[in-house]
Image 1: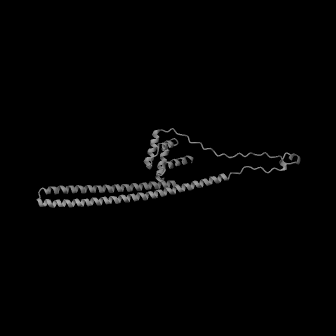
Image 2 (image 1 turned 90 degrees about the vertical axis):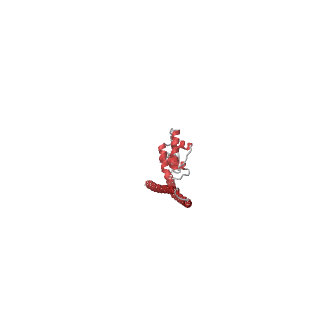
Image 3 (image 1 turned 180 degrees about the horizontal axis):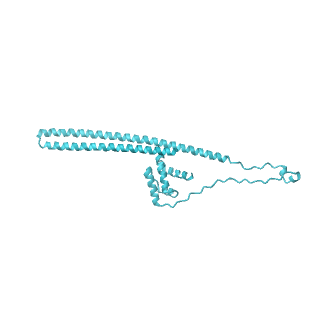
Length: 247
């Protein structure tokens, strides 16, 4: 259930991000339309002014020139203000990305720590189980009744010693290798690049394809791309696949 909750939270966050991205796109579209309207109005105003200049005297031309110079200065100021706003918005966006990334990494660290704690607890339980195995049979110390002379002294017949068979841990067989192809290698590399932005080597792709199918690798990449750090991402995916195979 905890994994399901995490998946739902990730999907909800993706939905919220998509809505925010749509709102940003609509705002940018509105600003672009307003700017185009202003440019068109300015061009029409200039054309009417140019037509009017043909019927004016020399003094009127001089005044028109001064007006155009002032408009150019105002346009330059507006352009400078627009660039400043764009820089401020970009800085705010980068800060927001950094904050979201910090939250994501904190969640990943908490999950990794919880997983490690579970592994340590499992190792402790397995060690306790191994220590709780019944001890090997130890025969009683020999007495006079247990010697060959017991028939003379009326002792008991020596009991047969049961040999203790040592426990042998089962040997884990290596996984059966698949028949992979260069097309699968390129396909796996494309999965990593598309969902995590990580480039893997051909040897890494070949090693994974020799054990798991591309679909299995794709599912692992999609899952870990939502929570895991990009540092040594390929090794994290491979470790995850090995752990899933042993379950």
